[in-house]
Structure formats: structure tokens, C-alpha cells
Image (cartoon, rainbow, N blue to C red; front, side, top):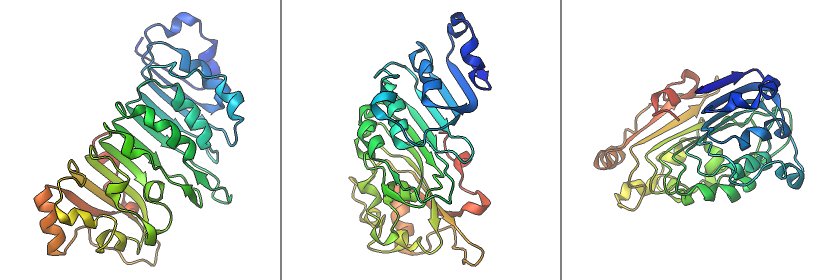
Length: 281
């Protein structure tokens, strides 16, 4: 049997032999860490998708005791919390700690936008480095939180990372006036980048010199040498003026051409430049 799909805990009522040779499991139910812990003991499981996983707060020592470090060969991990639910970064770190050599991570965390809870990636930063020789693609999407106190800062350690899709605040922070150089937060291996949730007006942080991609103008071979595509998603409100999809300045156009780099803005509301137009994550 190649894969199993179950709407929730019916999965755990199956006899152990059901799991022989299972490579993929998809669960769709409101679940907690305790519910999914047995999955991280299954030998041979390669692809795991958890929809409805929720943990607002965790007792790290207690919850971690249910998971063994490097206990699973899961290579593709997809996590979608339930509606109006939240999976705290400490919980995600516990799941990542159980994986030996993750190749792809897709983590979508939604939260009630009325809350004032900030998001701190510190626990995830501490564990991501273990995948420095394996993680190839990463998608962290639509957090829906008001503030990001500590962004993802460990990506430069991931020497095999090639494809990423993030809300911009996840790796550059909340304040566009203080965004660092993109090359300072991504590894040289990166090839395809999609950044979303760039609010109208903040695109100037990308087109200005100095700005967060202005070092691409230098043609320095040490600056993101493998980058082939940079898609920048602008999030407009009803009053904002749309920007053209291309960089019109000749200096930028020549630099992109010399680098053989495709770089453009897209309107998030139209879903142009979405993940479907990227190599699959």
C-alpha cells in the first residue's frame, strides 16, 4: 500500500499490519501533538500531511517526551492547522526534531487575527540547522499574525535549499525600512524565491539603492550566485495604486539580464506568480 488517507483518528484503530509499506499518510481532523506522535515512529513513512493540527501552547519537556529525536524518515512534511487554530513554533520544532533528513517543509499557520499574539521563530531556528545537508524546499505561508518578533534566521545554514516561498516578514521582519539584504538571509544555493504579503508602498525597499536586493546590481558572483527567479507579491488594498510587473530602470534590467535572472512583481489579489507557477514545493 503506497498511501493512506483518513479523516482523523480512525487511522489509529487500524491493525499494525495496515502500515506495512505505507509511504504516505494524510490526516484531516482537529488533532493535537499527542494524537500524531505514533506516526513519527512508523518506519518507511516518507510523506506526511497533517491538516487540523493545533497547539496554542505546549509544555515542551512533556510534549517532547512523546517524540524521539531522529525517529522518522519522513522527507516531506506538510502542516495545515485547523480553522481559527494555531500551531505554536515550539510544537513545530518538536515535529522537526523527530525527522532525520527532511527534504521539503510546508508549514501554514493560521491564527485568529483578533489576537495580539506575536510569532517567534526562535524554536524553529534552533532545529532547522540539522537539515543543512538535506532540506531542498520550504514554504511558510500566511501566518495571519499581527507581529513577527523573531523571523527565520537560520536559512543560511541550509546548504541544499533551492526553492522557498514565504510571507516577506517571515525572513525580513515587519519593518520595511529596516529590511536586510536578501542575500544575507538566504543561502548561496537558493534558486527560486517567492516573497508574498509585501504591502503596497513597501515595494520601494526592493527597487531602491541601497535596498534589500541592491547588491544584485554589483554582479558579484558571491551574491546569490544560483538565483534564477525572484517573484515579489504585492498585497493591495482598494485604494492602492498598482505597480507594473517589471523593473523598468535600465540599470536593473541590465543586471538581471547579466545574471540570467527573472525578477518581477505580481498582484497577490490576482494570484499571479503563485506557487503553481513555481516548481512545486
